[in-house]
Amino acid sequence: MNVDLESLAEATSGAIGSLLSTTILYPLDTCKTKYQAEARSHGRQRYKHLSDVLFEAIANRQVFSLYQGLGTKNLQSFISQFVYFYGYSYFKRLYLEKSGNKSIGTKANLLIAAAAGACTAVATQPLDTASSRMQTSDFGKSKGLLHTLTEGTWSDAFDGLSISLLLTSNPAIQYTVFDQLKQRALKNKQNNDDKASLSAFMAFFLGAVSKSVATCLTYPAIRCKVIIQSADSEEANSKKEIKKQDKTISGVLYGIWKAEGILGYFKGLKAQILKTVLSSALLLMIKEKISATTWVLILSIRRFLLLPRPRVKNL
Image (tube, helix red, strand yellow):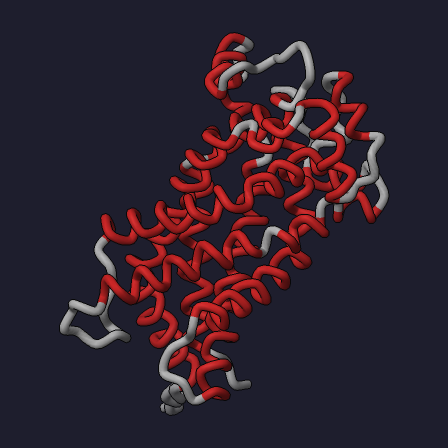
């Protein structure tokens, strides 16, 4: 079987980077998600600041509950990043082979990234929905993965799929900006493009810049997704107003407008940027530093599996 080893190496290093960054920043992610889901309430607010979520967990002696749903989130993050990086690398190589070009333009890069993101969204949507519901549940009352997925209909597991497909523009913008900045940063290096790599600081910086741009451009859609996936939780009555709306982008947008006005589309933007920028920057930094090692490891495994083993002679 012919396997694209370069795409496999890219996917593996990206998935490992995602796994590590998700685990490191998961308490911040839980605070951010609960804050976003509650901050849209019109009237009495439970969390006025992002830090209020952390203080509540400390006051109730539920600090470890900040990690509720970590296993599901890691599984979803690992699979999604593996599928995304494999698809992105594979489609990129396929485009270069078919077109005969030596580099990819911005438009083609966006289309390739969007195609990889769409495949990822469909494959991991149930896990994404489950992890969001587990995070937004009350501290200490999070249900298991199977219970969360089976408590509703099968279609409920795909809540937010349409907006997830729309949000494929987020990583498309992010990785396109990152690739363009990376190419410019490596132009001054004398080494080969295949062997040249960014420093840890430069990879972190470029990852932060690229994710900031993508987050600012797509945040209203990100907020809609949080609302859709946490709509079934039992919290404030204001949630019920939006819950009655159809689980569509237009229905949620109208619900936010009615309850909070135009500023409601950008509630929690600072928290989102803080979490996503750190997460994506760490992901890309780790991926850049382990990609070469991953490539060597895969080649070593391939050589071990393909080389004929010496026969042991019977004495």
